[in-house]
Length: 275
Image (tube, rainbow, N blue to C red; front, top):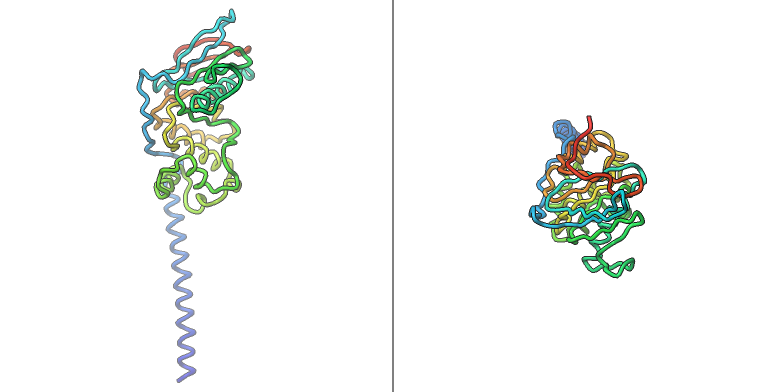
């Protein structure tokens, strides 16, 4: 009887082990099936409203024309502007100056000029931000803490948002499951880009003006499409430096600033997508 009891216990243990294994396999199969039916090529999110009125002045750019005279260009309300021009024309320098002026307006301070919110560039341009709520997506994506997790990086930009809400929003940016708890240093280039983008778009308070510097550089076609999906839901102002006219055309831009090879203003007007 004791022997039969022992054999029965062994058999029951084997059955439980087989059951657990089958259950784990079934859960994995369900997860894989869900992954196949999800529309992972699209980012569809509800972004916070930055509350930018059409009459709101966000920044003033004083750009030299062909004669060297400064010509003011005012960024107003939820405009969506392309910043174009040849390499070396000063597009990145201009975006850097706007971000620097915004930080100074918020008390960060600079020591280049007496008026700490008016920033000059080597190309002769001057920039004055009128809002501190400026988000900047640089080419280098150097604003992330590689040692911290994806979730911790995003929490620093949105400290008042509940963790579960951040996880839900990260999932909408295609950052799901264990990826959220991994250090940023372990991510692929596309994942790292999406972390930088979600930090920018979910920051509190939300940015009223987004600066994007060649955002499609080093992005594959799918990642560029995901970026377009996210930016179409953004209701603030955009200033996008890019050579990719097809990408710019998909952003439904309203205007264009074209810089000359010397960093001055070549032209300003409505954005027209090239064929």
